[in-house]
Image 1 (spheres, rainbow over the protein chains, first blue to last red):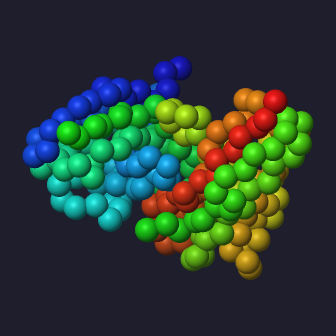
Image 2 (cartoon, chains in turn red, blue; image 1 turned 135 degrees about the vertical axis):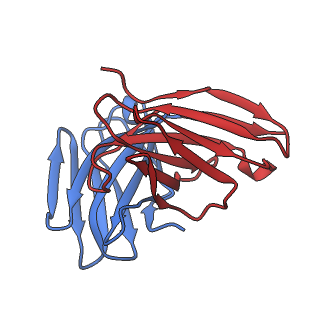
Length: 114
Length: 111
């Protein structure tokens, strides 16, 4: 039973570039949430996708956008990258689109902005 | 913004001792979860406790919830080296399905 998988594991970009991160949820899960985790901090909620729509959004600018596909996999896109976007980006999957379910996390994508 | 705040920020104890971490939050919640994160890895779900529950156990873990004080505690008994990790509380805010994490407690088990 495959867990949550994220790709790539590491990525280096320069300021102003755009990046796409990918996530496949745990088998049977239909909800995907994305988090940004700066070094030494807790994960910050970016947004959640359920039934191919963005259901909830945290305090992140429109440069952060996403998509969920019919197979429940998801992408996170970040435009106009700047140094402050350097972080570990975590994807979590759950069932049912509600916050009362445990979330299963991938190991994240480490994004470094030069 | 941070909904939950863990205390202490860091904790070092001898192997075999018990470790207690606390979480305080600001607004009413539907449930509270505890997660563990090993260095450089994703988070692992430990326990979910609902707002109408006061205590929950899972193996060596015991979680309590006091909604009147807006606080929770995580107790790890008979600690092991493998328990070295960061521990986060996460709250599901009432009427809002976002899950908000605290900054975490970094636990170090000394041999």
